[in-house]
Length: 639
Image (cartoon, rainbow, N blue to C red; front, top):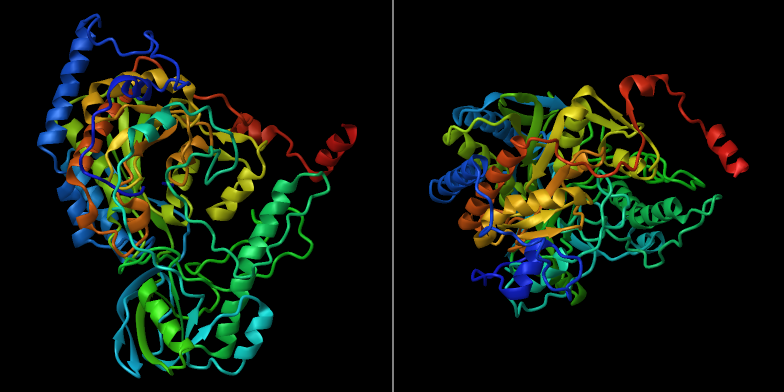
């Protein structure tokens, strides 16, 4: 949901920048307001504040000097390895995390089912090389859920450069058994700056001064324009003539624009894929849209999509394309073996072909599909509360990953931090008032599936919203659909998520909940020396806090230093344990432990932002007559 680069030396915020950034003032030119500044010198000490300060000191000591966060991250990445949704690796991680949380002293550790999702997939063997006119070993990785080749695929290398269906005509009858290169060479520029960066004072100040976000549809709920977790964009069409958005009958262009962009961006690549299948190509080979120097970015295989609904004016299934078909679906259509290679190798092959060379290559993909259990599983465990044990504070991160690396920064880091936070609380023998529950989600990479299912099972959901990505699109396109709440909805306190890589916490996104600002200011004040001071009104998207935010429950994602997240590790073959920054994860674990402890011990309920949808109980929803298309037309006519 949601990252770039890191220099190791970081200067402590000084003067006006520190005051404004720390307190989140609304105008950079205003002097710091005395009423908003932390007043540690004049704080009135009471037994309660002394006890709170003592607990904070103990959490810092345990988290910074006795940390086990890297031990946890190492096992999840180096030993278990990649954790593709519904793969044996993910199931092993489910079971290992439940066992480890029990060893930490948590209770009720278990795997909770959601779904069905579809098939699992495991890569068993892979090799790729050009064999003639010379040997060129290729750096590449098959896409997840790619089918196997029939033994070793041996064939001519052909570059298919068509950008529309007319361009495919010249390749008819020429692709049988071929290794087909898709797309065109991408320029590789020199790196004159290190890819690793931390947030600058200026960037943090801009976040702190940001206005309240513009509400709109997002991945799982409303989000503003300043998302820091970068969601993968759909691939753009190879056809330069993109469709113009047409207005719907009521003048609303938004839904029609979604349809137009979906058709332009998906339809030709889907038809091209079907063409390769029909022509009998052996393997489809492409490069990723970014990355160089051996780094490549790889996700799921493509499958041919259903034809767009003719004359559609509003999204059907959320996109105007009918329900999307995925490679992991139980009854997914046949597709071609698919491999992503590094840009340097892809470029070389295209250059050789254009120079008149005849190339032959050998590629082998041996993959195994797991079809016995189509359900996904989240790992959950509790630290039971005391006088308010029926109320819940939650923390978490997603445990599933892509398969190119070992899912270290995305998102073993967040899982390890969450597990370390609850370990700290248990190691100190602290007894929270409210129950603290950790959840390690799965299916996040396919659309927040595990967290959305859990929230729907436990707390509530948007009426009519289906599962998967299509459900998210459909709910965002119907902003008046009510939220149907379950009894536990009113006993929920807050959810805190970590999923922006390995970088340390620099503050928090309020997600439009201004009433939470004073709480975060108070809770982050003890960590000024750890540079976690920024409170921003900006929303951020693309990760599991949105499953809560979508139905009006407090859900938050932390601001983190970007380190190398976007240019190097996010969904890449270099997302491995060695890219994790130990001191950053220790800092994040310590702050996470302190915040969930404070949230669990508040005297009052955590504040919620104003509701933008009607809120109904299940009984009220059953008794309320559903609005029909005729009702909508009548309302429109009356107006």
